[in-house]
Image (cartoon, rainbow, N blue to C red):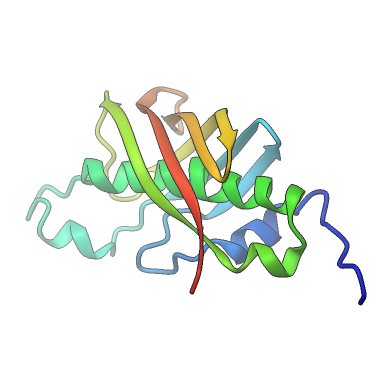
Length: 158
C-alpha cells in the first residue's frame, strides 16, 4: 500500500479553492498571509450583494451576521483548512467541513456597499479539529470594525 505524503503548507490559492462557500455566500476575496498561528485576508462588499435590497432599502448597511460570517470564513474556516493540511494528506482535507460552534462578537463601525474589510485572526486553540480564534476586522483606513472570539469544529463529510 502506498503512503500518501502529508502537505506541510497549503498556498493561499489552495486554501481558497478548499473553502466550501461560494458566491453569493463567500465573503473572502483573498488570503494575504497564513501561518500555523494566524491568518489574514480581505473582502470587498459589492454593491449588488443580495442582502442590501432589504437591509435597508435606500440606506444599505451590511448586516452584522454577514460581517461575522466573513470573519469566520477567513479566521476559522480558512485557517482550519490550513491547519488540517499540516496533519492530513491533501485528499483528506477536502473531505472535512468546518461547522460554526460559537462566537462572542462586538461591532464598532458600519460597513457599507463598496467597503473593503481586512480580517486578521490569531489561533487561540486547535485541538481535536476544534479551532478557536480571536478575530479582528478593519476597514481600509485601518479602523477596527468588529472583533470576535469564534470557534468552529471540523467534521468529516458523509
